[in-house]
Length: 155
Ligand code: 4NP
Image: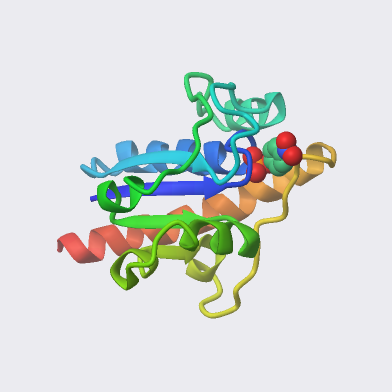
């Protein structure tokens, strides 16, 4: 099983999502891989935003080795589930394929917590530290659901 986290820049939200899920997968000894990517090419090759790095570090998670990359069509073959942070990421991601089987891999991550609500993880890039705290809280809750689902599938 391979999971991809997607946002606009791959420097704020999806690197946190990758780090949080990776941490939980290791803690639960689950053999699942996680990666993250951007819909844009704005920050290809960049480290995560320093505010995401700090928030993750506060929670004992090191995301400094991550580098920004842009999602590409081949990701639809490589990954089983593709979690997007907001509705704009959703449109931009599904626009990369016309195969229904691949479109069905794409899910709004907050639908894990509130099914069918189609809520977005707010983009914290232009705000302050509190935005990152909120993003962490939402992603942590969503990743707990992913872990539960994987455990259910494997039992
Ligand atoms: P992210 O946040 O999508 O959570 O990584 C953003 C990062 C950069 C930009 C926008 C959002 N930007 O416009 O450069």
